[in-house]
Image (cartoon, rainbow, N blue to C red; front, side, top):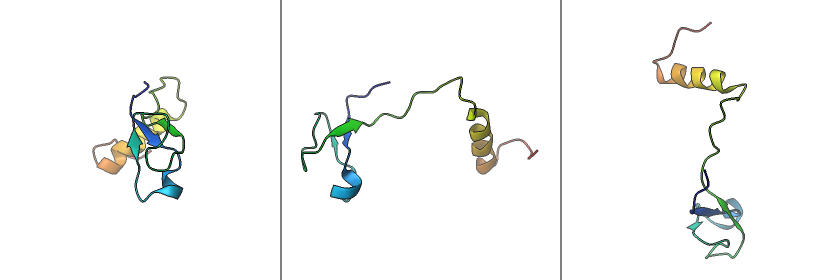
Length: 66
């Protein structure tokens, strides 16, 4: 999924917090912007099952540890 909302690629170095924009350049510092959407779900992810299990365990509603 590609979002229209973009974030300044250099926000960690140039800003106190993320700067969002709709253009290809940051309106504050002029550096390039990148897509702000998270990575898409990949059903072939070899470690997805383990991450989901860990997430459930941390929330407290997961299955018993192995």
